[in-house]
Image (tube, rainbow, N blue to C red; front, top):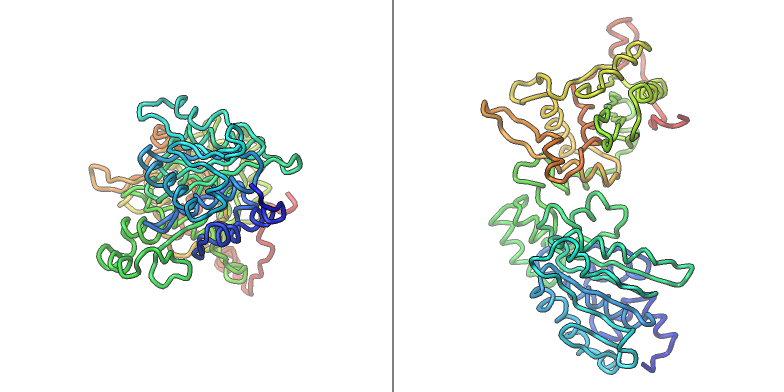
Length: 478
């Protein structure tokens, strides 16, 4: 290739310089964010509005990897063969034409890009599964890729089958900086699918990914300039700021999980991003919610909340009722909540009985029991609706990917007599979703109004004076 090693190293460490010098392009602000992350992040997910130049950045990163790594293998796929051919693969060709270096060093064809000096070992490949493929055949699309430097690019990742993504994830297994090997996974798409790889990257698997959100919101400092501000404003005026169309196409955000969902993905992620100073909730009521596992793959969750601040939950698997009671007792002793609500729908009644024996004032809550407000079908629906209002009204939750994924998951519906009901855990599992144990535990903290400990003391004992709270971590020293 006749390129100095020092220059290749610079382009590898500074992809933005590569784009400017080799491809003769100037990245937008959000594209620069991706390029800056590319050298150090193995998993990058781009959640995009309509038309921001997503395929261009995918091609830029692909060309950077091809040029600056020795004997790499880059595998590209998309939701359909037509989309791959007309979108991402055409972008590779377009940007090669901008660079005399890339034209001299590589040969582009309809399905493959190869280094002219090493066509058998230095290449990029466009791959697609057939529409009638089963999961095993889908996985084969990206399987069997072995090299010291491997990259997978998945365009329109929101609708790509899980089997394909699993094969790409498996390709990351051999990455080891100490051995000098590297593997990267770059995915992008519009937030139109409320399941699949892109959705999981933004919710349940958030800690694994470097996420870039791309919008065309008029006046936003990182909006894509490739979308007309006039067009974006027209869509907002026509459909409304919170309409699903604007959420997906202008704001680059996932719409509510269903048209009949209590919370959307962004409701949960915004709640996780909030920071509330301790001084603002230090004297608020403390409530503990406990969801007791009923099945082997479920979690037992202890979730503390104080006013607008929900703290990190304590999570257990395969723990019996006596051990659960012991764990709850330690939190009660340490944190001294003003109210403790425990789900007794399954085996939780045994936990309540044991804690009452030990003298702890806990309250059992039957999820299927009669609600306090007759407009709900049962207590669980009532608690979830109250929790949803709290989240949307400024509640702060821990940055827990599992919780963020659970909150938008269940749907609601109306019963024949017109009451609001929440989707059952069993029905969620039939849809391939996990039981929302952490969200259920947080919902339990809204089971009923709870009086402040100091208020109860004044009423019952005539006590007065200020109440000073500090050190709000209920698990410290446990």
